[in-house]
Length: 305
Image 1 (cartoon, rainbow, N blue to C red):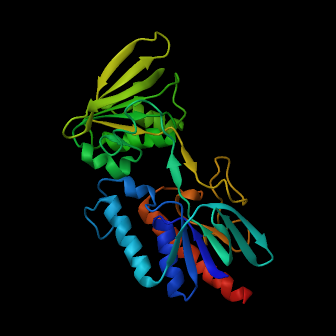
Image 2 (tube, rainbow, N blue to C red; image 1 turned 45 degrees about the horizontal axis):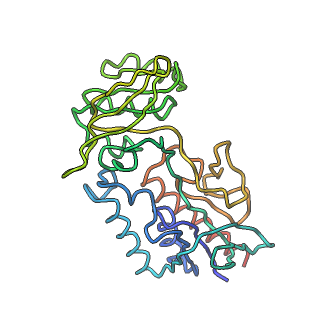
Image 3 (spheres, rainbow, N blue to C red; image 1 turned 30 degrees about the horizontal axis):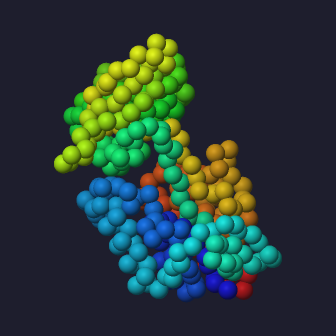
């Protein structure tokens, strides 16, 4: 039996593991893939303290090296379910069952994709799901924001301070964002609403340096197709938490509800990072969550001893 099993090897899980072994807990991190964490997909990270500019993959490798040298064990396996048997937690994986005194869920979330031609091809080459992360690379350029909710409008407003022109494309005839956000967008001179419109394709140069150059749009009513020149596309059509395997209290979208100590509705089970109901999906917040969850798990384990 382990003291602590951490499910997920991204920033939240790694931070939790480092803190846990420093508390003297026998800890293992379960990773579904060799390369974990959405941040691994980022070409450049410039908003993480101490690293003015670093690739996401390089940063994750530094995390993994730190954890390994600290004594955190890892296993490549997928968690299928988590259940409690008294004070014991059973984590069923595709490699068999594992037991622990406590579990931290740090499985993150994945942005929903449009599923149009060019989207996957141009990820990190002009296609992004995070304006705060990648917006500064589009200074004085033209960008398209896809979506009509709070996240889309909030990030369109953020991008308007960086980009020369921001097109906010939404498939409906009105935005779903809070009225105050809509009013701010309407009052921002370089934001243009493009409603009743679908993104059909993201296109650009494929030879040499791969980069987005235009977006192919279709008017829902007239069916007219047009090309919109753009240097970047920011997509906000939702986000999916990776939490289906664990039975704890969640919000309507599947994000795990926690208190400030990252405790879930189930004693001895904690959640950290993007998989929980959090105000921001950011690297620095995930690392904080992991440290708090490990601290709370340590206190819990000490008490049940």
